[in-house]
Length: 134
Image (cartoon, rainbow, N blue to C red; front, side):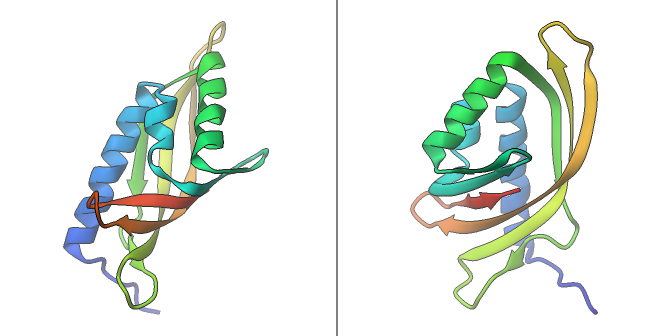
């Protein structure tokens, strides 16, 4: 099976989005992290899905009150993003992440994992919003 090479412009947009997401996460800014999701976005967590941008923001507000994240680095897979359908305004991407987690009274813990998300173009804003993040 031949892997698709992403269009350079879409890859640049995805990399720029990831950079801003990393910055928002490192600032522990729940509002900025939630802004990457659509109003009806879904965040899939180990405790189950969280529906809607407002609920996602509340989730991160609660998390950031007890935990501090730093050195958040997402990296898209070399073949991401992948166009969905024929309109060119929806895509999905996947990759890996690394970060340092620290509780208020604990030692720093390095963590890593993988992510996948579907995105759609926000034509007015000229950027992509996350519809579902895992």
